[in-house]
Length: 378
Image (tube, rainbow, N blue to C red; front, side, top):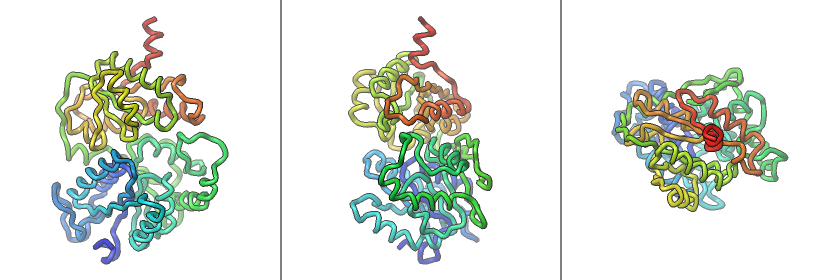
């Protein structure tokens, strides 16, 4: 049991499963520092060790199995401790009995905490934990562009389903978990004395009545890192759309090669979910230097060195990088996904969702896809 559990529970209990979620919890804590601070105590000192008696936030990492994700989470956990937060690392997927052990350990904290912060409301793990808590304040921080879909589904009263999953009838596991998912959706709907906040850098257009939307402007990131040294060339940001079955792998490699040549890109920042085989082909077939970041790209870019132009396909970074790099003269440019690149396994919603990610991005430039470039020059 954590030291704070014996003292009556933390002021806020956060659950994260990815480095980006943890980053956005730190941004939320920075924005709400006054509310989290214990009465009569000073705020966390940058670089200070964690002091559970002082910090008001306990971060619970529900560790995934992917090695690259785990590595980034370890680094982010170090930063969280330096900010004065308590971090609990849970091997939540370490075998068949791990979920039962994890839920058993977390149940006392969940029942005592005033506020639950979560990075992925679609996570079955998080939805299960929501059935235990008595917290009246629930907060959802960004898990990338999925936040846009979560808010829209909540507003329309739909079941919570990730945007890239193919439409159709739910599977056996979905049906088995449906009561838990429905309960989580009800808890995430404001009512009575229960308050719901969405802390996001994404454009939220369909917020349900009663949901408080707070803008994440990456103030902590800008205060903690940089400004970066800029290089002359361009950098390209990778995506996991191939791994999720949305985009064809060969079409993707052709697009990366064409973009790199057109814009003089030298480095390719890999997404943590990209396969080793695909990254090997990116390096050998495009000549790009593949970089596996040890932190979320917002922090990597803010620390530098970084290219004067950052190229990306539709993804979270077209919304977050302009905020994290505000005032640095870095140009963020996005290339749309050509409909011809989509696989037959892609969700019917995929093209519209990806177009919406690009169309709602602020302070970014649009660059033509290779097909559009061919038409323009032909």
